[in-house]
Image (cartoon, rainbow, N blue to C red; front, side):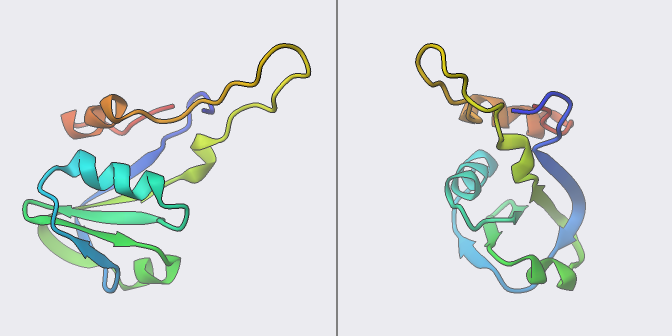
Length: 110
């Protein structure tokens, strides 16, 4: 991951139209689902589940929604430096344990 790069941008009290509803109660489950989908660009997290957004155009319809937090995914933070020709290849990924930091009141930094 890139140093100083914010993986998630939080927008409190914000939701967007369209998307796919997932009835999960854990915000970290929603983050994991978004991270594992190559097309996910954001999700709206609420106490009753979340809505995953797979199209940037969805975010153009953002609106005020009390109690909902929109999380915008910055996929550029997931990129690692190019592998070297020496030794085995390694990959860095975001772990579920790292995701819980977002809900402690700060953005997740890579």
